[in-house]
Amino acid sequence: MLLFGGVTLLPLQWFVVGAGLRLHIVVILLVGIGMALLVTEDDLRRVVKIGAPFIVANAMIVAIWTATTLYHGLGLRPVAQQGAFLFSFVAVAAGVHATFSRDLDRAARLLRWSGLASAVVLVSALSYSMIVNGVNPAVVFGKTLAAGDPEILQKELFKSAFVGFGFDESTVRGNIRHEVFGALLLAMTLASVAVHLRPPATAVQRWLYRGSLVLGAGLIVLSMSRSVMIAAVIWPLLLQVRALQAGRVSRNFALILAGGVAVVSALLALGLAQVLWVRFTQDTSSYDKRDQLLSDAFANLTHAAFSGGVQTASASSHNFVIDTWLRAGVVAAGAAAVVLVVVGYWFLSQTMRLHREPVWMVPTTAMLALPLVRFVTAGGGLVPPVSWMTIAIVVGLLAYRRSSRAEETAAAEPTPATAGVR
Image (tube, rainbow, N blue to C red):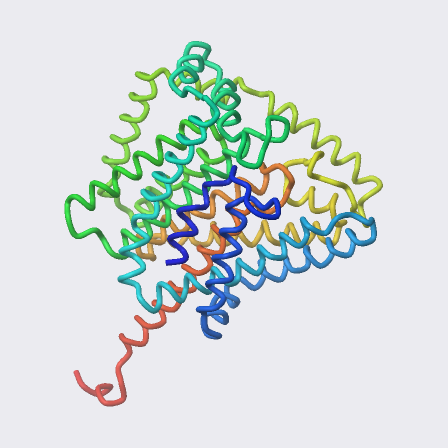
């Protein structure tokens, strides 16, 4: 299945293939093309009905950015890539609706292993990359724990492992890991959606699924990616929000609490708790750098407020709206603000009604936490590739939920032949 393959390969973002494109970008485009060939007009109509504000706002950004890029004589490749992502967004969203509507059993039984498959592929690829680059993870972890410095893990493990597959030492960036592990989180939440729709039939399958969540959570912690960890924490919190809305404590609350205690205990035992504490409270170098970049961005707006033209690749404010303003002017920035508001509205509106929704809507809603965090933290100030894929899957699932709700309502209504029967 296209969706399963795409989500499984999405973390492999440090591999560069033909024409200088990174592997995950090729995967997104191929999944989009494949989905476009499978969907019907009805699938498209249903997802456009939900995603229209997001689609129109992004189309405006692409159109205006194209005009300002031509005006300033800059390269069109970044604009074209965002346009291709927008196409893939519509196709994937419609494809998700089609996949779940037409053959839910088959889709759910396969997709419930997407988290495990993604984690295995990521660990395998990282292991291979570390072997090729001579990185000894045990030594790096030892140095990290001894110094209590998360930067050692980022530079000597991830940054070193990403070298040689399209990036050299001067161009590779350790912060690739944010999107790498964000893709893993997406796979985990999609697997949870599938598990709740079609629960595993055997104890072995249930334990494999739970083990994949533990493995994925462990990898996300080791990534030292604050944005992904924050987004991941939203997921169990939404479960408790749903329980409180319903006026009862979730049956899984004790399990979640016990799991939290076990995680904290494991981190303390391994010495990682101190590293994480430093990462969130004392490792302020990235905060300081972003403050300076934000100041520079506001300074650049004085001469780029209407016509844009600022190259944000090397001077990003790490804010989607501000960087869009710098690149394409104030009108495009307004469209970017609409994108942010729309995704925030989807998240808040679904959160407010979780107690009236089936439990699979919890991980669906939790998916939106990642793009919301990345909108205000991602370098370059664009919708990141993983966020395009994430939002597309959410819109497809929302369209499926609306379709299934309509079918449930129709089935509950009396037919003319039975309307008078009591």
